[in-house]
Structure formats: C-alpha cells, structure tokens
Image 1 (cartoon, helix red, strand yellow):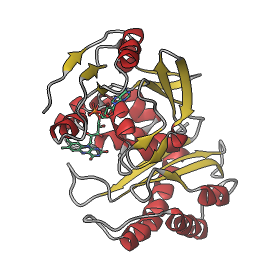
Image 2: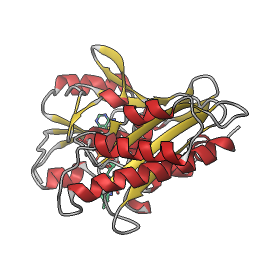
Image 3: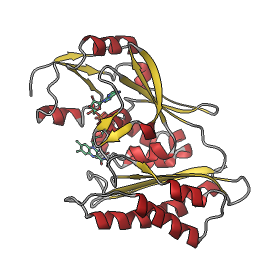
Image 4: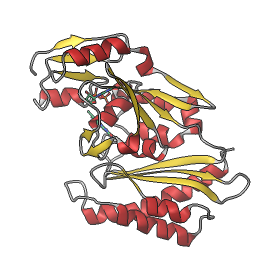
Length: 292
Ligand SMILES: Cc1cc2nc3c(=O)[nH]c(=O)nc-3n(C[C@H](O)[C@H](O)[C@H](O)COP(=O)(O)OP(=O)(O)OC[C@H]3O[C@@H](n4cnc5c(N)ncnc54)[C@H](O)[C@@H]3O)c2cc1C
C-alpha cells in the first residue's frame, strides 16, 4: 500500500478544513472495511487519510419522539443492530445492519461507509431508503441535506463532493402502527453479499388494517437501490389481500433491472423480487398491527 499521512480530527470543522485543504488527495476513513481493501488493491492512493471516528457527532445514536432517529455516520453497525430503541422502532434497520459481514466486521463497519461505498448490494441501503432517511453533508461551504433515495447516481457513485463529509442520517419518527421488514437473499448465512435485498416500511390506519402508507425498496437488482412506486400506489388505502400481494410482487419484478453475475442470473433475481416483496409485505403488515 502506498504511504499516506494519517489525520484524526476531533471536530467537524477540523475535518472539513482538512478535506478542503487537501482536496483530491484525501480519503475519509471510518471502519476501513471497504477502504483498506481498495487501498491495498491500489484503487485509491490517497496522500491523506482522515479518520472521522473521533468526532462525537459522527458516533451519536439518539431517538427523539418528534424528530426521530439520528445516526452518526461513523456509528459502528453492531451498535445499531443491538440498540434497544432501534430494535423496537426500526426493526428492519437493525436487521439490515445485522446482515453485514460478521460481528468482527460490524464492530468496525459503519452506515456512512456502506452509504458512501454505494454498492448496489449494500445491506442497509434498502432499509434506510424505505424509512425515507435523509443524509446531512458538511463542508467548508456549509451544510446540505439530501433524501438518501436521491443520493445514489450509480454503482459506487453518489452526489457527495470530494470535500464533503457525511455527518449523520435522520430517520423520521414512526407513526403509530408502523413497522418494517428487511429480507436478504444470499447463499450462506454470514459474510455474503445480497443477491437480492427487499425492505418495506408499512403504516396502518390506527385501529384498522388499511395501509395508510407504504414504501418498498429493492437492493442489488439495479445500479442503485430503487423504490417500487407502482406497488406502493396500488397498496395505499387498501387492506392487504392475496390479490394485492400478487400485484405488488409483480410490480417489483417489473421495476427491477437486474444483471446476471457469478451469484445469480437476472431471471432468478427478478423472480425473487416478486416472491420476496410479497413475503416482506405480509410480515411488515403483521408487525405494524402490533406496533402501537
Ligand atoms: C469480510 C467482509 C464482509 C462484508 N460483508 C458485507 C455485507 O454482507 N453487506 C454489505 O453491505 N457490505 C459488506 N461488506 C462491506 C463493508 O463492510 C460495508 O460496506 C461497511 O458498511 C463499510 O463501512 P466502513 O465504515 O468500514 O467504511 P470505510 O471502509 O471506512 O469507508 C468506505 C468508503 O466510504 C467513505 N466514507 C466513510 N465514511 C464517510 C463519511 N462519514 N463521509 C464521507 N465518506 C465516508 C470512505 O472514504 C470510503 O470511500 C463487507 C466487507 C468485508 C471486508
């Protein structure tokens, strides 16, 4: 690996100043589980590596009934996976975090790294998109907030500028009778990337089984995580039936733009989008009924 200078700022202001001063010659380091491999392979050859894990805002995890969940970009995934409030209010986010690598990997790996690496199979991406998460980006030019769904522009490509730092994610507080599900299809229980990932967040009309709001996001079947607006529209305002489930599954299969690769064929992935979307919706509605 090429030699580099290691920098460890303890404030956001210090970090963004370093990114601005050394623009184009810097890489941000969080858990390093993606970055170190890419540096070893010579894909990235930065002169400066800016470790952001000592910045308190980047490792904050807090819930507020009005503003929802704030997750610092460099919070270890293991903490998200095991946090009592995340498990209770955002079970699919905890599940998605738990699907990444092994416990050892998750003790280091972070949501900021998963988001900024932006592989189509990134496990926490569908859950976060289905939760309508926003990302807060900071630079010496100021701050901006983007809907995560709009942040990805292609495989390993995002809207983040070279001098920007991903500070945190904001996830809206769930309405009563809201819950979600993340399902990952892979070939072994740990240390495998998703062949298909499906996340859904469902809100029911209180005291009723009518779907008030639903978001569905597919991972690993398009260049970026994708929503399924056709299925969302046909489900909203209705009680889930087998016929609606079938229509939603077919809409997900139509929305997918999968590729064939060493892990699965495009046809298999498309078929799984249908089946997994039905399964995720059925489970999410059941969970939402019990989530007062
Ligand atoms: C053995 C193994 C198994 C894995 N299994 C899975 C899996 O099952 N599912 C999955 O989705 N991934 C998997 N991964 C990939 C990886 O662990 C995740 O993508 C992880 O979330 C990356 O987080 P990190 O903190 O380690 O990122 P880093 O490696 O530190 O950073 C990754 C990229 O993001 C940038 N970055 C990091 N933080 C910020 C920030 N705050 N602001 C701006 N840019 C930032 C870095 O500059 C770098 O380009 C695996 C990796 C390994 C090594």
